[in-house]
Length: 264
Image (cartoon, rainbow, N blue to C red; front, side, top):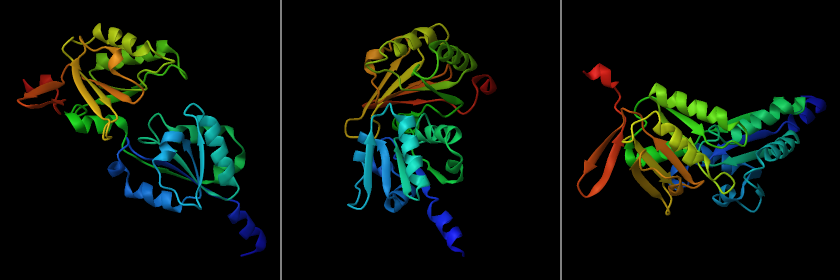
């Protein structure tokens, strides 16, 4: 191999986008931990990086949760210099998270970023962790929506909510509420009550799998936005979703695999 070829290879690094799951160390995949062990520089939101036990030779670059594109560009810049870079994401990096930000930065960035070795390591996303704690609410067709209107108009969110509810999808809501967005979840409940029965099950799943986990079951008619925060995934059932009462135990919520009209 010529010296020029060797230099070219050395300046082409790797960028790995790693999903750490919903918070429990038991829900971090072996694949994710293998890439963490191989990484040199780690970019991520402060709490996500705090979940890693990095070695002294591994560098930590933390930033605020609202700086995704800046974080992505900084990570790609370091990878282009030949570094083995990890971008850390909660849940699954491809679900409202850092994998999309990395792709967006690559599309808008310099040509050399497209030559980087990009690896996306999946993780357990919030709706799967919450669903597993309560039964099988995602047992039939479902969709996931972000209630954040920072990157899309609220009118688009309402239209998608209406379309999903009218089509019979179970709906998992990400980014339901924050100090900067205090009204969106309440408005979403109001909108969905015009389409779905008041008895439709609603699950508030906060910090699933963590010591401060809180799982609450209510109905759409009684759901209030104050039960949620940014650590909550809200799952809203379809008209088909059922609740099974169990004496002395939390009810089970599930969506049958068959469509109701097919069972008659």
